[in-house]
Image (cartoon, rainbow, N blue to C red; front, side):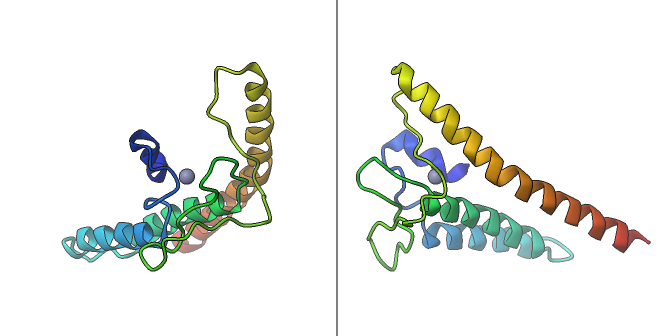
Length: 135
Ligand SMILES: [Zn+2]
C-alpha cells in the first residue's frame, strides 16, 4: 500500500506506480540485505514483487480520474498505461456522495472475490512448502 502514499502529495498513479519505483524498492532491499550475514536476498525480492503486484493490479483496474492509468514504465517512459481488461472496478474518493458508497462497496466486494482465493491458494502453498521442508 506504500505506493498509494502518493495520494498525500497529489501525484497519485505517477512515479510510485512504476517499474522505476519497483526497482528502487528492490535496490533499497538489496542494500539492506547486503549488510546482513548471511546475505538475505529472498526478502528484498519478495518485497519488490509485492510492490510490483500493486503496480500490476492498479494497471488492471478501471480508472475514471484523468490522467487515466499509471506511469507504469517511468523512468523509461512518462506515458500513462491502463489495461483494457478492467478487472477491478473504479474506486471513487468522493465519499461525501451517498451513491459512491454503494459503488465502492461493490468494487471492494469484487476485489475480495478475486483476490481472497488467490491469497488462500498462496497461503496453502506456503504452508505445504514449510511442512515439506521441516521434515
Ligand atoms: Zn495504487
